[in-house]
Image (cartoon, rainbow, N blue to C red; front, side):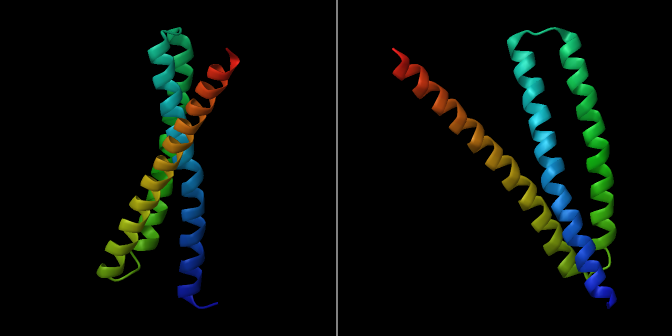
Length: 115
């Protein structure tokens, strides 16, 4: 149970939580954009915007935790880990976009074959 293994465990836990929160943020932003484009009631959007604000607070706390962990590393490793975190967040969002597009394509195919 040396300090470096504890640090790695904390980092891995933090990264694992990041998947969920980034996915949640992306989904909430997409939901708000869809509501905005559809002209739904403002009350519906306000509820989702409130949830987005809550998720952003959680994301901020997670970012603080990951920064505290990464700050224990030397400067080269800090840069590397911060870049890895940003890349992971970007990949999560890109995967959501691809999944969303696949869903839309599947729906178009279903509609096309209905007629």
